[in-house]
Image 1 (cartoon, rainbow, N blue to C red):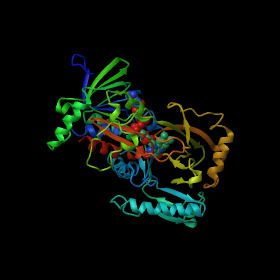
Image 2 (cartoon, rainbow, N blue to C red):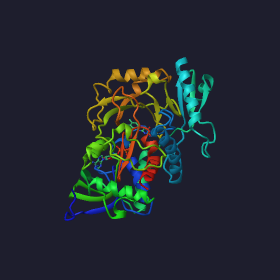
Image 3 (cartoon, helix red, strand yellow):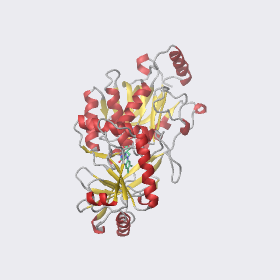
Image 4 (cartoon, helix red, strand yellow):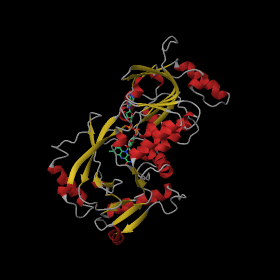
Length: 433
Ligand SMILES: Cc1cc2nc3c(=O)[nH]c(=O)nc-3n(C[C@H](O)[C@H](O)[C@H](O)COP(=O)(O)OP(=O)(O)OC[C@H]3O[C@@H](n4cnc5c(N)ncnc54)[C@H](O)[C@@H]3O)c2cc1C
């Protein structure tokens, strides 16, 4: 319990934990409001050293997830916001487009279904007035991409790639321009509500009864959180009116740090989703304690010239070996899927994934949709780790973006988290204000 005699070294309205692309986008959005102070902290010495710098850099169109999920809705909105942001602030990006290629009748059925889904989900916009997806025949494919094999391809014209470092640097600069603060090498190690939750809930009910906005924390002079951090200068205490936990692979641990949450009122994570666009901004109950799973994805580089000029996604059986490009036009394959126990295991094991046998296998699978791949030019490159709510073989889990009394938690922000980042920030802002 907080006692007024303790020294509080820093007071803020918005404390954002985690300077990955999602935390940066949220801090940028909140600092741009012009009212209320924003502090973004990260345990690492610079921004975006974890999942945000170990991904495919793809601006997805949002076709792969259940229609009503946050993943779909935030990805579609995020896609639009991302192109706008990149154009406005000169962040390097390219609308490469993507082909999903089919090799047999089952694949073609899948592509038809995906095309129907695209047409029902994606409306024409000023930027993208054309169809959201269309099919190519084998001849049309060969004319444009002579190395790509397939009976047909579904084209996703809204898919592209972005320079994630450029994006993160721009967000960082804009936070500072708006007067927000960013502090690195600061790790959150403990968190506590400043007064009992029961008292706070009674007050909120009263506020809502009077038709007032849910004004949280310092603006009303009450409530908030005491957050303990370690830093090279020693222990730091921050009093924050609102806390946004955007700690990526560590988001479950950060959430579970919060003391004085009445366990009896915690809702299971699956029921805790606040519906997209719904007016209720504050969930009645906290989340149940959370546990993330870590799912590693390896990438394979190719030291020869690229064999395609757009992103090529093979059929479902070959998933994990899709072809993406970086902004320099280099081709890479992956990421594959491997559940692991440690959240910092980025190593490429030369005896397994990096072995000649494994590279030969990758060449074989890639060869099912791409001609002229030279296995000796493939190499195991880097790996990223997905913060997953679902374990191996478990059903789909959506992003958790949950607000309870000034504490916003973002958990399981795996792909399409990069694409969705600016939309997630917009969504979090509407939850708080
Ligand atoms: C292999 C792979 C491929 C992907 N490809 C794509 C793609 O092509 N397109 C797409 O849209 N998405 C993609 N994603 C998903 C995307 O990369 C993530 O959703 C996004 O980067 C998540 O950003 P974040 O800010 O939530 O997390 P992170 O980037 O992990 O940032 C979290 C930050 O929190 C900090 N932190 C953690 N704990 C603490 C603490 N206690 N105190 C202080 N700081 C703390 C960490 O240091 C870290 O910097 C991919 C992900 C993976 C793994």
